[in-house]
Amino acid sequence: MIPTLNPRIRDWRGRRVWIVGASSGIGAALATDLASRGAKLALSARREAQLLEVAGPVAGTDACLVLALDVQDPDAVRRATDTIVSHWGGLDVVFWVAGTYHPMGAQDLDPHAARGILRTNLEGLINGLAAIVPVLTRQRSGAIAIVGSVAGYHGLPRSLAYGASKAALINLAESLHLELRPKGIGVHLISPGFVATPLTERNPFPMPAIVTTQVAADEILAGMARGEFETHFPRRFSRSIKLLRWLPYRWSFSLIRRVTGQHAPGGPGAATAPEGAPMTVGDETLAEMGARAAPAAGAPVGRETTAEPPAAAEPPAAAAPAAAAAPADDAAGGPRPSRPRRQGTRRKK
Ligand SMILES: NC(=O)c1ccc[n+]([C@@H]2O[C@H](COP(=O)([O-])OP(=O)(O)OC[C@H]3O[C@@H](n4cnc5c(N)ncnc54)[C@H](OP(=O)(O)O)[C@@H]3O)[C@@H](O)[C@H]2O)c1
Picture 1 (cartoon, rainbow, N blue to C red):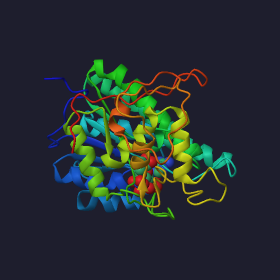
Picture 2: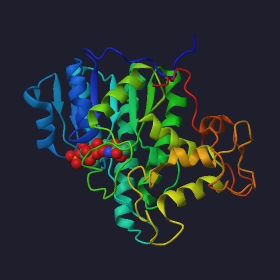
Picture 3: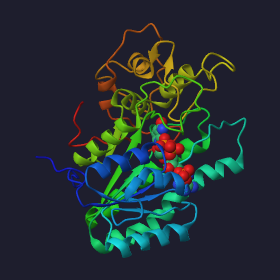
């Protein structure tokens, strides 16, 4: 049997779990789900009133600590870590969910807002790691689950700061896994597609394959039960975005431009790059477009290719075989970002 990339976490009874970003959305759903599975919870975010609401009657007891904080404040994060460790004597799993999103493009780049996104999404996690890693390292046990996004897989229009922050989280989670797994610590990367939360409710376009927060929580916990490094969902959607990382830039840029309308200023679909990006043109999903643009099964897929993206009239070829072929570095553009890795234990749904 192939070993899993992380220890499987199936039984949550009595586990000491800290959820940072628990006041709404995915983090709140995780809190409710884990409470019903018997975990001890510490809940953090800036809005204490919402945290108390999520915690319900057990708020403030040993079963549910409520620790309001701003992840941008390293001292506050360290104080909360100390409080948890002094209450519970240790920490088993940390879900780092806190994040923020504003659409931003090259034309309306707002350095202040961009810094705010990076400070919350990236620096916030770094503040967390600085406090948490020493605790887990001392214990030689525990796990950190980092919520990234499929928006981190590839650059997307109007996703300037958010996409960059999530791409950084993917890279950071990979580095952490390489370093911490040999020390007995699990590192999980969670890559959601669209989830119906306050973060996405202002999106003015239909979000393909959007799931509820309950589905998101189920997917995350199922991935951890499988011992995966990365859990991405919903698979039909997230796989198609992941495919972009495997395609030569010539094709991925072309696909994204067509899907988002960025090839023609003001054209259909323009300015709709969202949390996770818009992935339909008419009735066609990115996956279907990817299948059309992907080379025939067995054809080489490499950054060095000079082939134009196939014309729309070309017969569809399977996207999966294209994704399975190993891409080479782009001779002109340098090496690609790290490629998605196959999970030894990944199961098809
Ligand atoms: N919804 C989606 O479609 C989607 C897709 C991919 C990835 N994600 C990621 O999933 C995570 C959760 O987002 P969500 O969709 O559930 O949205 P959400 O309901 O807005 O949740 C965001 C959480 O982060 C907390 N937070 C934000 N800034 C913070 C700060 N400076 N300090 C402490 N906590 C902070 C918020 O609490 P306070 O405001 O109370 O501080 C809230 O609990 C984010 O990292 C997001 O990027 C979401």
